Image (cartoon, rainbow, N blue to C red; front, side, top):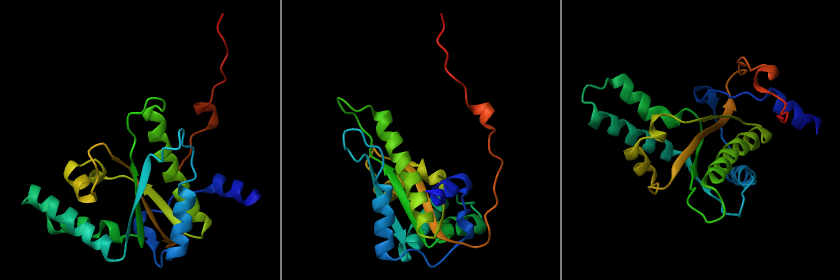
Length: 191
């Protein structure tokens, strides 16, 4: 249990640009995704799904993003287009976590969305548990209608996050964390 607590106390994201290969093999990926799916899920709806980008699919998706930017902005610099082309090549594996939350007679949509967020965090922890590093991010294409079409999302689905997974290229740098006193209160009844 101490190893888990130490991991939770010291966990840091490693920027996608600092994630090198090799990534997880197929069996390890299956275990990582199985762990990611073990989250609170009121009503057993599984209101999320995973899209895996590895190998050439990372580059192909980046080319689609670059084409989308170029079509919209004929003046886009070659540097910007190359950035889009290489977005998913930064790490050997990228997993898009898709929120499939929807109307339900008993399960609030908000609980379903939170479940997708929990799947993202479990995905990060599972990657670290297997000796990898990860970064959970969302960028412009997580909110862009045409980019979501490229991902094959239904109009009711949203990207909860893109989790980039690989080997840390160097030690991650921590960032300032909020003081507990600034984010915690004790409830007291009035009256």
